Length: 213
Image (cartoon, rainbow, N blue to C red):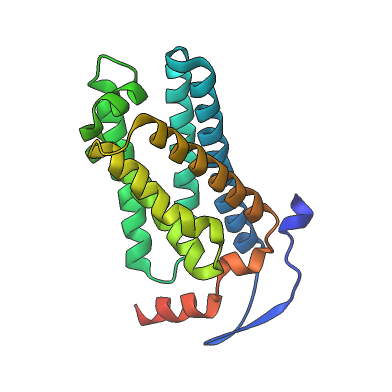
């Protein structure tokens, strides 16, 4: 892992000049991808537990939801996005969603995820976490033209919005949840084998925007 983080010394040509990828750049990408993997593993593990154990798994599902949010937070604080207001907006959505989730969990007589399922209006508090995740999917689809993130950009709002409005039958919700798990796992695995520099973007643009501000 330490060798993986070592800079290669390669010089890249950006829009506003040349740049290199140093150790801290590589570490930020590793953390970003690690957060995505953590969120994906938590999501898939939780979904499998739910289908296998049902309500008996609710307590453990709450812990996995916490890991899901932690992974997403790590990714949001290390992701490279040229538009700083958009970056801050996604981080804000994550923060609001995490605080909303804590409020729902501490003001409900039932386990957290059971409360979310039984009371779709609770998504108005916790659902901002998934808005932030959709932002990551959109960014990846726009920057890398990834087919799985294109589907996820529309699938996630469809699933959560449909549940919130009580428009989706339970079998369809289960199918969409399974598709979310499969596509996010594909996304996470593909990120692991992607070269480091593309996730950094054009460092000369970031430097130029910093000077302008």
